[in-house]
Amino acid sequence: MSNLKNTQLSLESKKRLLKEMLFGRRFEERCYEAYVERKIGGFLHLYSGEEACAYGILDAARPGNDYVITSYRDHIHAIKSGTDPKRLMAELYGKVTGCCKGLGGSMHIFDVDKHFMGGYALVGGPFPLAAGIAKGIQMKKGEQICICFLGDAANNQGTFHESLNMAKLWNLPVLYVCENNLYGIGTRIDRSTAVVDQYKRVSGYNIPSRQVDGQDIEKVYAAAVEAIDYVRSGNGPYFLELMTYRYRGHSMSDSNAYRSKSEERIWGKRDPIITLRDRLIEAGEFSQEEYQTMDAEILDEIESEVIKFAEESPEPPKEMLAKYVLAENDPYVTGGRR
Ligand SMILES: Cc1ncc(C[n+]2csc(CCOP(=O)(O)OP(=O)(O)O)c2C)c(N)n1
Ligand SMILES: [Mg+2]
Image (tube, rainbow, N blue to C red):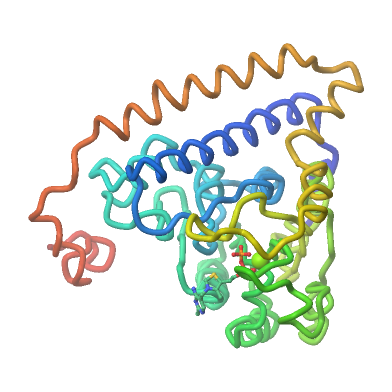
């Protein structure tokens, strides 16, 4: 039965989401600095510019109850699912207090208590995992849905087509969200993909789909409310394509030399945080001073709580190194038996 929520965000929710998106942006900017300082190692893929996608979709869902899965660009999805930013930063620092005990790192964030199912380095890997999670929900007659976020380039993997076919065949409760930032590393989508409009590709599987402006959180939220209602009501899968842009390179090792300055300028003007802020200011509901205070509070929280926690946490002990290599040591596999 449909329980459609209001597709319009209240003023209070807009202000809250502005704060959440700004927190996500500042959190990742601090990750950038910590990486340059060599406090964070391994790979680091930032979501800067794409915040309206994860925050808009998950605000319409039931974070912590619905299941969420994504790729290596995963920090913000984890935070919005309920992962404590302190434990997330500690994970990036490789500390034992991290949400994966410091053994996973940026590409492998996982928080089973919050139903955040990763964090995967394999492009296209989460498509079938999401279908499997959704099959599990269906078999248990659960009210949750699974939300699978993936990039535009992932759709050229075989797993995309295999998973969509099974998802529709079994009418699984899964929402696929394509974060179309126009690039797969340094390759622009029209150089790798025959059909650039990703929402059109799923019509071959008879899955309803829609393309939405991913820089406007109000539009993302409205589309998400309808899509989630469709999936939760037992109608089967749905596919949303969010048009977005990442403001930094693909990862920290990317010099970002393949995009023109004019393209970057155009998308820079469509910053999801600035767009929402200015809309609120123009409506007389918010002021530049309030924004500056909000920003200062966020920066202070990140420094005095998040970074402090990560810095002061201990490294994992050496004995832990091999502990989680074999499934037989994993309590989730053994049901608590060691
Ligand atoms: C199976 C597999 N093939 C190739 C790679 C290398 N790789 C890492 S990211 C990436 C591009 C993915 O782009 P997209 O899906 O658009 O996501 P975005 O990084 O833009 O968010 C590729 C090819 C990989 N990680 N896994
Ligand atoms: Mg991409």
